[in-house]
Length: 154
Image (cartoon, rainbow, N blue to C red):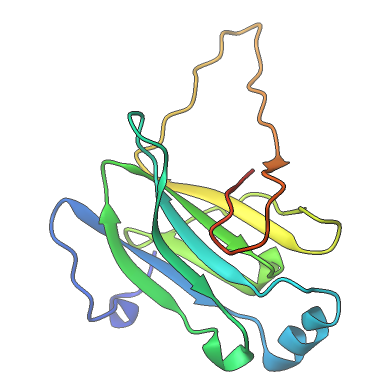
């Protein structure tokens, strides 16, 4: 959990929770990753809705190291939000939601060079498997990366 001294001045209402994206990459590490990447790193947040397609709450693209600033926002606690970070190694950022660290999961290289992660926070449900079943999760990329609003899912 985040120590009280690190809780941001941003205060969420009682139905929301604070999402924090903290970037831990150094400028040298940033520079070393830019040599193999032609896609600018980005952050997308999608609120999942069973009625309509996911919509983008935020899309941030980071063109330079100076653009890469920690991000905080209030999100609905009782909805599922997908946090997508692309173009940065999984060890270059951390996530917390409602004061608790979030397991980012796995990254994959969607074009053979650029890593992407997709992490769900909030009230997200997954199928419950029977004893003789296992949950299958598939990694895919939509095949479009002409803009940072392309959808990714791990």
